[in-house]
Image 1 (cartoon, rainbow, N blue to C red):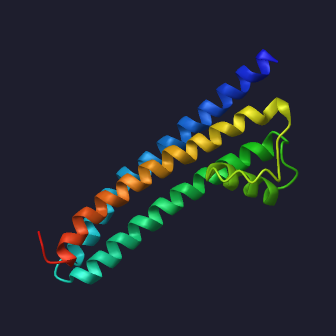
Image 2 (cartoon, rainbow, N blue to C red; image 1 turned 45 degrees about the vertical axis):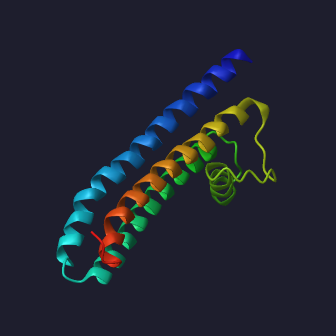
Length: 146
């Protein structure tokens, strides 16, 4: 039992680390893209706000999607889920920490799923902070106070 727990911890930690790095990379790589978009529409405040904020949200959603798919692939590869649809559903419910409980893993692989929830918590925290940062730069222009 201890070996199973150790293996789950190693696998979960590795995927948690990988997913977190993917999300950080998405945020960092989006900065020059968002800056270019902002410069392109610098004389059109409302359009600039819409385009930059929309691009930010889409980039972050894409990163979250990649992470959910990575967790789904793990559960499918390990045989913990019977098919892709179930694996994606379980991965999404776990990643978002909803945890409906309608699908549960066997004891030998249950612990690894907790790392999927931690991945979501970390990534949503990064997303929230980044969105607030972007909005704090865009909104003063919209409301006329710099």
